[in-house]
Image (cartoon, rainbow, N blue to C red):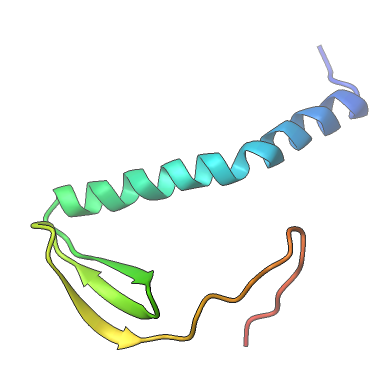
Length: 79
């Protein structure tokens, strides 16, 4: 049975509302999978980029600019 445009729009809206949660879960799972495989991951926090090792240790790679506040729905152009 074919869905109406209204039904598709509602479905898309529901998915969009859940996207932050779903992407957060996917990111956490991918990070853990990499660590479980013995790989290192990069993590940005407290004004620095860190290399995190599977044994839980970490090292600073470089200092970085603080996070940029973003308004929900805003579009940002990267240079």
